[in-house]
Image 1 (cartoon, helix red, strand yellow):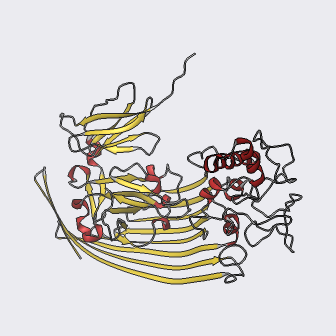
Image 2 (cartoon, helix red, strand yellow; image 1 turned 180 degrees about the horizontal axis):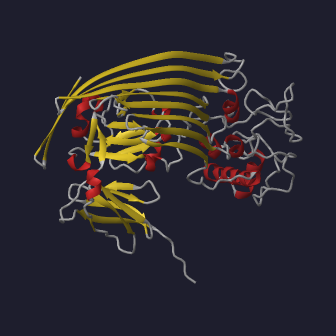
Image 3 (cartoon, one colour; image 1 turned 60 degrees about the horizontal axis):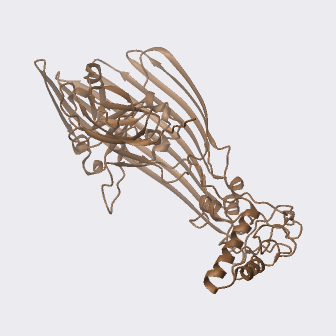
Length: 555
């Protein structure tokens, strides 16, 4: 009988065009993963993949090609020109261009690709899909905007965040305010040539978002209902989750330390370890098996003696929500004629966090209307309203849920218990009391020695960290063509933001208990307004069949 395992290996290769010339900047992606890279100036690339996985090669103006990883560690590729792709129009700074005329580094993601991702915002779902752009989340908090970096960190002291531009106007709000279903395309302007028109605001790269518009023809009605579930991406380490197993290991540690540090013989060290298991200088205090505290572990064998366990603890089950996920509902209607087009949509999202009592809710309303008033005049306007509610917790690194679950011994309960009977202790209203320093459990010799000042389940349940934001984004434009080759465009943008943030630290468990300040509360209210005026004068001239001049003057 033989077994084989797909082990990851390093794949190297060279990518050339149809003429055999090296292609720099080719995106190489392991299909079905977020692992990707791009070819260097000489067309060389290196990537890690397993046998049987598929590599996808893509480049502007070339046909996307796939190769399956086999036994060879070298995959060279000669790409083929894609004439149709070169005719595609790409959204660029203050306008559009055909791919064949692009000189800067621009990557565009269409709505079809965005729709495949079950994510609360469009950018997070594009992780690994855009070469030279790093997209990652700083936390698992639902509703948090992702961090985006173009070719690394652009500044040591200042911000390295890119500039967002929505429908031609710089956007100062969070990208999470936009419903991914309302987005037609996202363009990433990655180099200086592509982002130059935005000046120093585009120094860290530019992300141009174009929302959906109505199209001439039959009325189009769309209904999108989605449900997704969240779970840990990487399984945690194997840990001791049984009280007996943990006590045996702790006894062994005390015994070994006594032998090494004090030169005690093995038999005496075993007796000392049993005697000090709960009540010594490094004693665990909590005895979930009851009875004689000095004989729970046999000093000779180091094994747990028979006895009924009075209580159990499962912090992971209490702190994490296995039913977390995203439920979303989206509906839109679009249509129009050659003279007038319209688009309306409404969306609702409810994202339940993996940590208990965390989440994100969003309601969006969107509309836009475009009118071809005459052969030379075009008008349009759009409005988008978003209500976002984000809930989290006021915890710190010491009581971070993942670290807590990994470090706390399985003998310490979430709620206080009677150490003689194992029954949960209730307050005068019949609610269970959390186990922590200010609660002395009946028949306990002392409080919990491990981080007794806190209880993350209590903090998750009682503390409040809530942010509510209302955003109204409106755009209007007028486009006038005159003197055959000239086009004047006026863009106006208005962004209104209203926000309310509430932070409450409870008075029952933690640093704001009655012994300290008896609770702590802060609230913030704010309003922000951003106006944008743009005047663009463009001149396009075609000379012969192969030469084009495109000059833009903007203010």
